[in-house]
Amino acid sequence: MLRFRLLTMLLLAPAALRAQTALPPLPDSAGWGVHVLTLARDAQGAVWAGTYGHGIFVHQPGAAGWEQIRSDTTATSLSWDFVHAIAFGPRGQVWAGTVGNGWGLSVDGGRTWRTWTLRELGPEWQYVAPAGIVTRGDTTWIATADGIQMTTDDGAHWLALVDSAGPASKGPADSAVRILPSEYVRRITLAQRGILVATLRGAVLVQFSTLGPSAQSRGYGAFPPLNRLTLGATRWRGSPCGIRPLADSTPCFTRASRNADPPADLKTAWFQRPIDLGDNSYIDQTYRYGSTMGGNFQPHQGVEFNNPDGTRVVAIGGGTVVYAGPAEAGAQTVAIRHDPTISADGRQFRLFSVYYHNSSLAARVGQQVQPGQLIARVGNTGRATNDHLHLEVHAAPSEDVDMVVDSLQRFPPFTTNPELWIAPLPGMGVIAGQVFDSAGQAIPQARIYGLSKPEPPETPFSFAETYGEKNHPHPLYGEHFAVGDVPPGTYVLGVQIGAAHVFRRVVVEEGKLSWVVFRP
Image 1 (cartoon, rainbow, N blue to C red):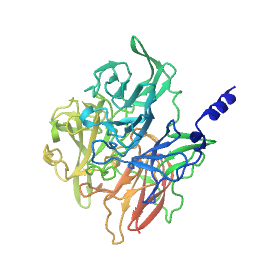
Image 2 (image 1 turned 120 degrees about the vertical axis):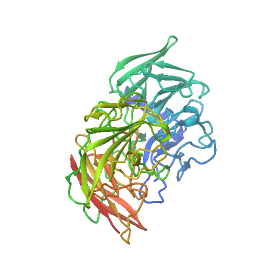
Image 3 (image 1 turned 60 degrees about the horizontal axis):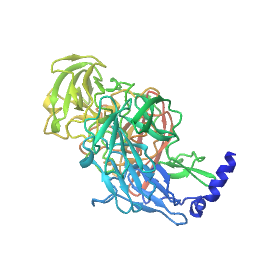
Image 4 (image 1 turned 90 degrees about the vertical axis):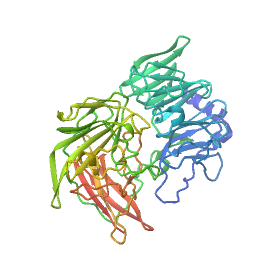
């Protein structure tokens, strides 16, 4: 019976839809592949691919190539080129959700967009979950790291679904219903009588009736796989290097001219996570230390932990609280001077950790704190576009707190990469290294490709970046980049030096650091 139904559906489908069984390669001028985050197909059979930094590509049935939709400076363009959610309405509507800049609606095939970003959303709602837009009839649900926005009239009005704490702002919604176990939504899919929602604190089935929405606890098993599409007899997947058949598991790069150093013990993995493992203790992979997110932002001075309002922030190590209050742009901030010191090249360094954007502080200046002790709660104070903790680790040549926390200083002089100080997650390793040009000089903001990191999918990893002039290496390593929480395995990493692509083979082991140097 099932086979008969599938055959009937195929025979009754539009001819264009049946004919779309293969896909040409995506345009790739740099030679590293286009990172595809989501795949979707509209009612006319066109394939839509949301990407990391390249906007949306659309392939019409029978076309030789792809059309590209990108953001620009106009008010009616796509809001952001990092797209990992695409869905379609019954009258040709196209919805697109982004990594960090809200969502948009097009009613003319993607030529123009109405967007909901910072102006409409405030300092929340901007991180759409992967594949986090679903539609049924005239109803659209947008799942984000701050709850769900629901509309039945293409965004003229919204209803917010949130947790018991409620959002700091309702964004575009007229009202909010406190129905989710956590506002941090990771997956969403249609169910027979509503929507199935996976959050940081479990999954619920949200049903809708004339009495309003209601929810009951559910398991996670009903969620479809991310980033998949079936055309004819072939199943396709988006990958860091393009769209590939699902059966093709070959890494993006396979040949390397040289091996990296074997994994070794970490020199200073002295500290723990500032977020409990039961919360979202993953580091945001889009904006790591030294990153510019592909040239879109200033070089980052720390790492981010995206979590809901009020999540516990704990001390990464023992020490003395030397600052507690508003800092740069008014961010509620805690700074701790830690007990260990480090010596390198005849100099001694004091270690500080600094915690920004909190909603409230639990620490006071002069207080002695222990590893894991509550010091603050996650928020979005200061220059923040979502609820998160920004963590910095400073290796300073003095105890001058003003050199570590300064309300007017956006680029503190002694920041280092926290991923070389906090222990990697259980089962994971670390990669660090250097990238030199033909003259032996470090190359700033070079992109290192080939690393695969599936978690967390809501902030996807695409490439590492070497540090810019505002970033600083670890005193004992002198690295140009470092990435923690890497799954064990063998990787072929590549970087462009001049006109050449240079590759190295890197082995990663649990709890170890793998050192790699790229030269032309």
